[in-house]
Image (cartoon, rainbow, N blue to C red; front, side, top):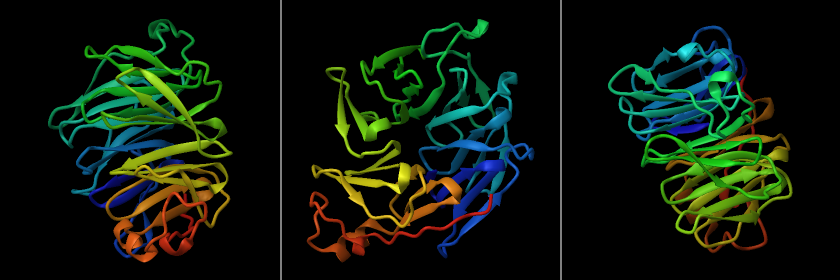
Length: 315
């Protein structure tokens, strides 16, 4: 799930892309994937200006949707890679973006857009196994790209990697984590990783140190950051929020379905999960006015500031 200049977008099984309309309803943009093959889409990322949504999925499905022109562009099976793409990250503005896309074999393919079509770089495996001979690379479970162009990858073996100045990969953690990593966020100053056992790991680049934070009692699957606000979502419909220096607090939700992705924006914040579940929350500035003196660090939760809804989309 991503935020764009046209509001939130989300991907789903069978090649479905949906968007939130101005009237609050969610509508299907297309339902057959980038190559009209009904291949499921598992990951999405937006350009820094929010004008393009890139998506990736099964059988090498890859492409983008331009929200300003309402046009879909198909780049399925780049460099003849037809295995399932598990993660994607994008940095830069539309027409000048840098891509990272990863598959279940632990391979990461970089791409560079200069005006029009992407040019694909050399496939590599962040864990150092030999991509040309197959190797034994662990599955890449998440990718992130910071505005400064650096990429980050997490894998199923409990490792975190960062690209170097020459686009190689360097392992930066996390020692003795002993949990599965699910999502990674990076903005140039902050790196956060969500994981099993309800943990969030925060990276301190200056001293190259990771600090584990016990946020929830269930696996957290996705994290988003906007301004001074953090939101993490996970299994059993949990949503946790942190604002500024306050503590993480659990927010009420109307679902017990696992939530897989969350995005924050100036307008509508939204999360998506199993069975087509969509949760959304209205403008944060309006909510702050409604909630008055209610503090994020308090131990009680109030629904007065959360205009959430639970709906399903056809997919």
